[in-house]
Length: 284
Image (cartoon, rainbow, N blue to C red):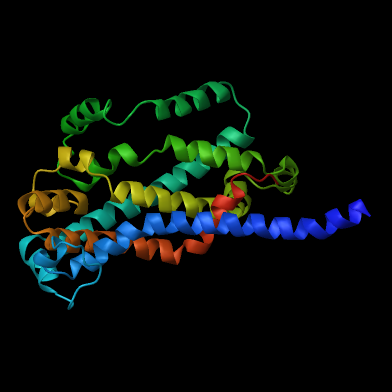
């Protein structure tokens, strides 16, 4: 009789627990998305409405003068192109080098495998600010200042990407790779035909993370860029916000335009991104 009552009460308890969890997650989601919504709505407000007291959440009329000022004052289209070129190239190179290195460290046996992998992991311990001056001297000596390659050079190899792909590929059964070798497949063919299709979800997740990190990078482009034609979006936005601090509406409009490519990339690869994150803790 007691066990029967527990069975009757268990579904109700689980339903209550899930309800509380969903409520907490919804509150957290609102806390994360509210500043973004406020930024977008403020982009269509006048400066008077933004600083008004009490705070107005919605614009009385959609004011487009902020966006007009942004396009008149800064070369945002050129900066968009610079950021997209650098971020897209970095994503492509990092995905290739990370997947290839991960396959090598996970499935190939050679002298110094663990030592080299430990050195790769140790690169994650150094903050980027510590390496700023050595990297600048290196880029300056090889005459890559104010170039696309100079902007991308520190980000073309990702220790985090190598670690993530190595751990994921390590879970792939060796029997699959051994069967391919018996059929006469070379290591590179195994990498292309077997490894890449299996790690596609995690590559999508890593690609979005690398794109966002590279697209939002401010300190390094600010260090190596001299001309206005090579400035990326974060650099231009920083200069614009400093020069037009008295116009919060224009700053909000510029920030709204900056995040558009990130939103587009996430919407396109959203399914693979979620799938890749959900598979990071699983084993084959």
